[in-house]
Length: 292
Image 1 (cartoon, one colour):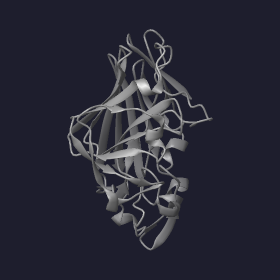
Image 2: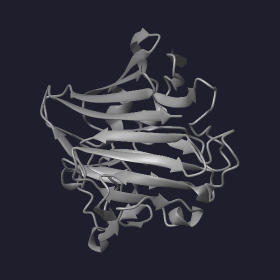
Image 3: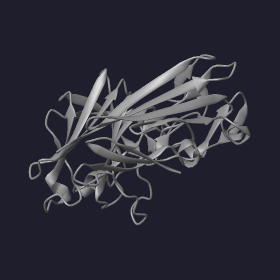
Image 4: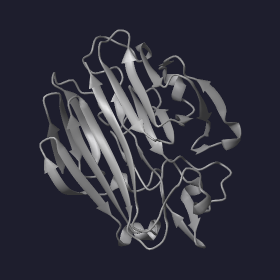
């Protein structure tokens, strides 16, 4: 089911399947969100839960039992229920069930609220531990944006850049696809905007460790008056990714990360996990701002 949110600045469409945003248009009908061309990548903005990235061999061990789970978890492929809806706001929920318990042995509720405030689409993600035991999970956003912006001048991919604010040096978590390598962490200087090139992503995503209360990523071009800003609060990691030679870039706030290539596979020891006590909740927030 498709849900439409609208105000004077934005027209947004969200699919209850995966609680996935599928369209973000401004008042002049410019489409900013990637339209899931399967030639490159057939998704728009999936919700990553209860893991971010890939488990080693798509498996993990928990309490002496082995479970299997695919990349980025299962929420992106499940139907959410609408529990509240207005013209500019919707709240959707996913609950654990007999199928999720076979691959993820935790009782949970995942509640996602999307709402419009002026030229901002805000996403509030809340994880609630409904079980009696401590819950282990990761969560993240994965929005992809058209590059160049559709109908916006005659830009090329290389005309665009991503500025990371605060402008500073970050730890870059290297990938040996599809896993990370914690023994090869290096520094990346992002005091100046990062110029986009297709070969930037030939070795998979660029992932930074974030140690800021708030991080802002601005996608822009010197040839365009338009830009897209993604702002996340208390995200542990931030990722940039694009499929090979694809006309988009993902700006991804993550509260979790893929397995290290040398992981033991024991879920309790997984890097990037959040731990949630019984009946407690965890909130992760980010927004997408369209500036024109």
